Length: 254
Image (cartoon, rainbow, N blue to C red; front, side):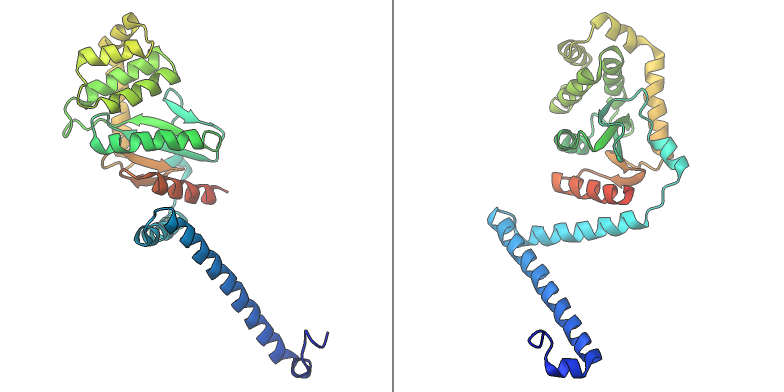
């Protein structure tokens, strides 16, 4: 006991307590700092630059603050998290629901599409993604026509058919003629007679336009626009950024 608590500490218990508390904090900080240093070394050896590492930590700090300060009302969630009748991925019972407004002719939507698909394969059990249409005709005049075609694949096919079509559209963004859209639908396994009927049905276009109006109403200013449990994050993002944002949304949901 004497070795653990020197004579001076026993004579001055308050001062001794403060000193030992300080030493404990110092040791904990050294361990924490050392762990980060070792972790950073492995990350840098893996090919990631120190500059990129700093940027990621700054981004994480920014997102953490952003999510902690975000206010989402039940009314906001009711307007945004509309999964019924929409293409979805993942688990409907998950704590994190991600709504994404996409334009099939938007280059930024194209950039993030494969990242999103890979992310949802990893998080199929702890996230749900809900696809929403937001064709911006002022920028992409044919985007609405493509959205109608994709809607018809979803309505006449199934989730798998839609997501296969989704991938094909972004992989062939410069070849979205009516003929090709119909060919892609056939390759997705959709009955072409039902597809043609759906394309000609004005209600299909109305559905797409309704989604566009809802995108504008909830504050979408471009594509892609995401809502993580109602918190808006706009623009394309890489896999690390998407994972960071998801984790912040998950922490807030717990």
